[in-house]
Image 1 (cartoon, rainbow, N blue to C red):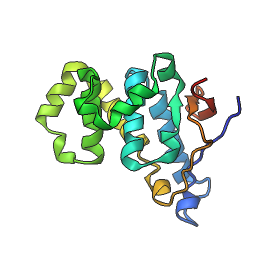
Image 2 (image 1 turned 45 degrees about the vertical axis):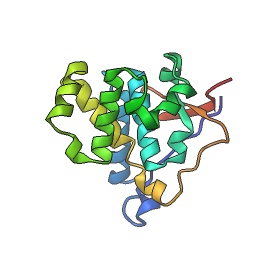
Image 3 (image 1 turned 120 degrees about the horizontal axis):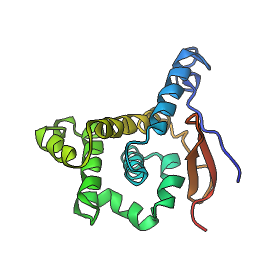
Image 4 (image 1 turned 180 degrees about the vertical axis):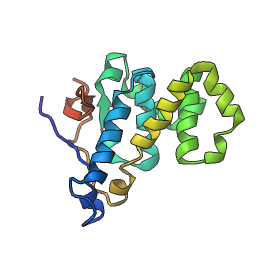
Length: 176
């Protein structure tokens, strides 16, 4: 399996700011800490990640499937339901997580007492915080998307996994 190392170098976005400097290190440390958090089920984490990709129109993120979610049965049928999750047959916990994702990205006023109550039915405070951080992590590349420099690594959907330090590892086709 070939590994592609994606990067978000601040210098690429804002020349002169921080090529491999503290800004890049801070972004990398944050991303690694978030992907290493494991309080939320990997399937829900993947659905949140892919919802972020849809909302932001991130071609790279949309072309990847997390290995842990694939191991739990994630497939393209599930992927096709994300855009219409509220009317899908997803379980209520998944719908609540995706509603939180949308509230963070699209409509902060939707992060209200009703959503909080719904989330608390299915998730602990630590899990809700992890979902929030997942949304923030998978939204950090918005500048790259706006510049259209987040192209997929191949023409097929590829595998995404992380090493113990939280560094992404992109591999071969997600489905054989």
